[in-house]
Amino acid sequence: MNGSGLITRRGFIGSALVAGSSSKALAQGFAGLGESADGFAPVVPGRTFTFPADHGPHPEFRIEWWYVTANLTDARGTAYGAQWTLFRQAIAAGGPQEGWANQQIWMGHAAVTREDTHRFSQTFARGGVGQAGVETTPFHAWIDAWEMRALDSVNDDNIAPLELKASGADFSYTLRLDADRPLVLQGEGGYSRKSLREQASYYYSQPHYAATGILTIDDRPIDVTGMAWLDREWSSQPLAADQSGWDWLSLHFNAGDKLMLYRMRQTDGQHYGSGKWIAQDGRADQLASADIAMTPLAFTEVAGRKVPTAWRIEIASKALRIECMPLNARSWMGTSFPYWEGPIRFAGSHTGVGYLEMTGY
Image (cartoon, rainbow, N blue to C red; front, side, top):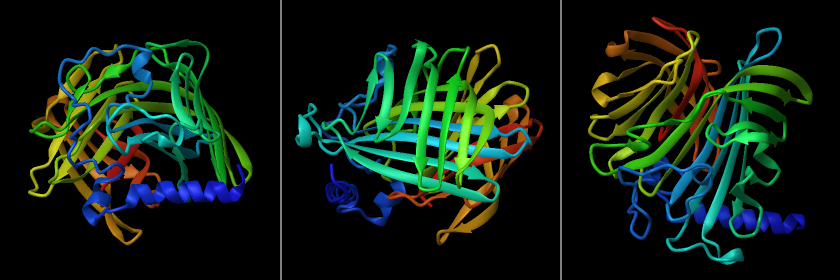
């Protein structure tokens, strides 16, 4: 395809994403997450997850993503972060159509972060023409040249080993992801509530990846190692109309435990929280909204917004009281639907590293 065709196609897709959007729609992000889900499949409790099938797309639902974040260091101890995300949105309900009539839009985000820099890139594709998609056997998720693919002898129950690749104008990375422990179903058996009403998603994670590879910034390759976290989530209406966005964390404790938690922000100030504590031996404890206290400690002015980039997290039932600090407080993803996403470190009752994502600011 020639250059003018690519520009025309991406221009069309970008227009489709933002057409008719308001500040509220932009706050809720890609796919109008708080809009009516009429015609799309509902998320209901009691789903039985099946792998590898559920590693693949679910086009009867409006939105889903394959999302990897990695906390990395080089031989000198310099810290880095890497993000790889593939989003799928159905712009109309109904069975997938062929070719350019296909109603699936794909969007990819990739980023690398260091204390002194944050680089990101974005790409779009229309479904049905082979430019983006996800296959389950062997597992392969891609958009343009970015890909997450199974290596030989992949285990479908822990979706490893994988190879992860992405690049932008001034960065690239290739990472190998290995895991020796199974996937974790978030929420109640993979049913993850987002409010006290019917908003929910199907959600599972692989928080146990060991990552190795090469990260390149400004044509300088760097050998890195670290830990990575995969989130898989799909839904048709994960936000209520009075929810403006979320604050989400994935934490790797130096002692070996893992923690996922989030706060869905509501306009009345009665925010809804949820989380899961994952012990080294694989046991996982669900955390209710009342268990979690998330308090902003410091704000950063970025892209004309005031964003809470330092947090205190308290979970009394786990004797947890930590303060989370960003590696780079200006880790702003200036994409079509902008948000903050970057690596963090934390200290207090527990120590470790993780990732923070904040939407709707």
